[in-house]
Image 1 (cartoon, one colour):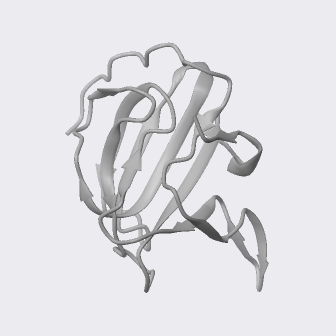
Image 2 (cartoon, one colour; image 1 turned 180 degrees about the horizontal axis):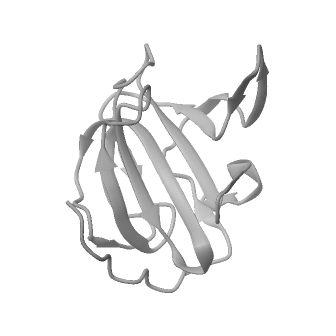
Length: 138
C-alpha cells in the first residue's frame, strides 16, 4: 500500500487527546537493562475504543514492527506523528483523514503484551517525546 499520502489537516489544538481511557502501567523513558519505552502503555478492557489523538492522516497500518502487534501511525501537521500499538481491530485505512477523537481501533493484546493495552507514542520529527507532557482529556 504505497503511494503519496494527502497532507494532514491543520491541528485542532496544541494538545493531543488521550487515545484510551485507562491507567498508565508503563511510562516514557529508560527502563533499565538498556531498554527504553518510547511511549506510554495504557491498560484498558479489550475492545475499548482507541481514539485519534489529533486531526491527521493514517500513514501506516500493519504488524511488521516486532512486538507492536497491530500498529497504526497517524501523521499530523507540524511534523508530528502518533502511534497506537497492540490493537485488536483496526477501523481505519491507510490514507484516511481522521479527526481528533475519531475511533481508529479497539484495544487488544497483539504483539508482545499479555494484557489488553494501548502503547501510545508521540514523535516530533524523528524524536520521540514524553506523551504525558502533551495529553489532554478533551
